[in-house]
Picture 1 (spheres, rainbow, N blue to C red):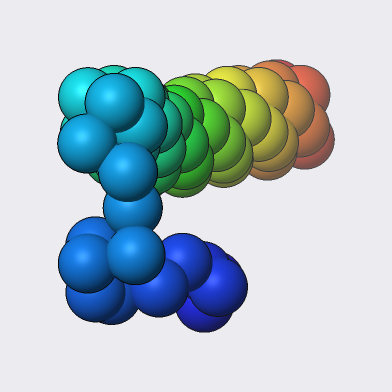
Picture 2: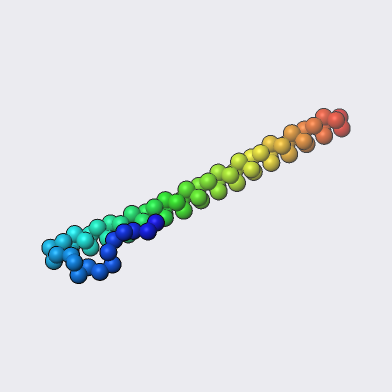
Length: 73
């Protein structure tokens, strides 16, 4: 994500300085929010995958035990 902003603020008019600062601050905040959102999504996905795997393992194990029990009886 390369921004096309000029690095030198010499061309900026004094009145636009505050607006420029706000724009940069907002962009930084948005970037942080995006990073945080991405991290949250990753964590949620991981948790969901782990839960699904655990549930599948438990169900499969229960079925196997039930089958073995049925065969044994």
